[in-house]
Amino acid sequence: MTWDELSRVVVEGEALPKLEDVLAWARDADACLSLDLKTAFIPEGRLTAEVLRVIERTQTADRVMLIAWEHNELVRAKNAHPEILTRALLRGRPVNLPETIRACRADCVSLSYDLIRPADVEQLHALGVAVMLAELWQPDFDFVARAGVDLVSWGDPAQARRGLDDATRSQLR
Image (cartoon, rainbow, N blue to C red; front, side, top):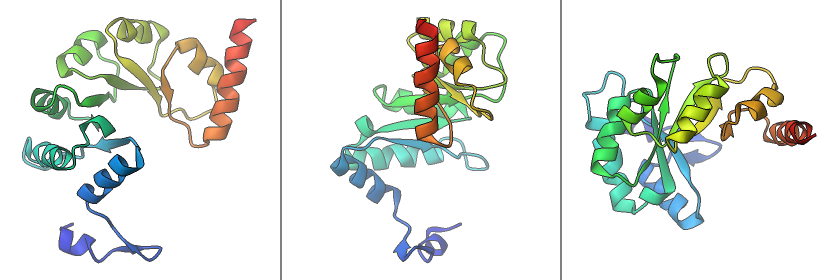
């Protein structure tokens, strides 16, 4: 949709903000954001370049993590701003996971629940890369704790905290 179309969308009485407004809010509120670069069907580099321009204008490079399925866009972002945090999204389990992540210079990687292995987490941690367990479809917090991931995606934060606390206590026994 064009901005002209989007600018007419109202949610609960509020118009949609522009990215610049959201980043300024994050800076002023001391909040951090993950920005998902949805680059499909857009000329290569165009969206990432514009997002980086807005980040520069708002001086919020320390407030964002850029995430993408398109790892070339993460490299493009890192080349322009080495300090910007990035998270690589994966749909599968690469033959050489450490090399894949090293190549895109990601600071974090999202691995799917059904494909993650504790040995993968260890390899990535050895590179200094954080690991997010994504697509957790059942509350298997014992596995989350055993795998040693740094972040987990779960719809109910309170349930996740309780489950992770219980799993950690169980591991310490």
